[in-house]
Every structure is written in C-alpha cells, then in structure tokens.
Image 1 (cartoon, one colour):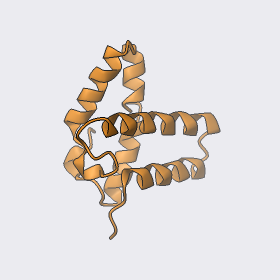
Image 2: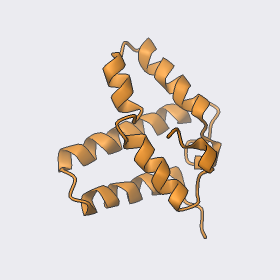
Image 3: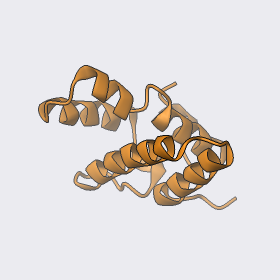
Image 4: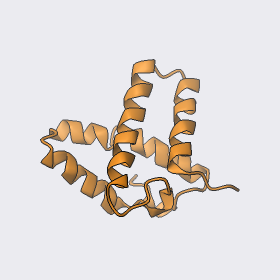
Length: 106
C-alpha cells in the first residue's frame, strides 16, 4: 500500500468530510486548522509532509506556540483537534497505514 503524504491525507480528509455532508463552513474550519498545524510544523525540524515524522511532542509544542501567540485555551483546544479535527485526520491516516498507530493522541 502506498504511503500518503500529509498534504494528500488532508485532501482525502476534506473529500471524506464533504462526502459525509459536513457543512462548507465546518469543512473550511477543519482544513484551515490542519493547514495551520502543518504550516507550523514546516517551520521546525519536522518534515510536515511526512506523517511518520510527526509526534505527540509536536502537538504539545504547537499548543505552546498557540499559547505564546495569545490563543485562548478554548481556541487551542479546538485548533489542535481535541474536538476531533486532528484526531479524525490521524485516525483516517492510520487506517490508510500512513502513520504509526502510536502517534494518534486518542
């Protein structure tokens, strides 16, 4: 099975959201948050387009980054996907065998 990139995974996730009748605003919010996360990853030492290089530590660092930019706790909670944005993406990616199962924060 071909390993997908994070970018491909996000696009597949978007297709799945649309296919499951999520509202356009919800789809946009989910995808924007995921792109913000991967954009932040790209500024560091992690290969943002290789899901296998992303760890739980990266999520924690991203939370710190959001906090240092004055994002509220509620915003950080929402953006990092504890309301299932990132969780759904990574579960979807795991299903496609492109991310180590130990990474999934759920």
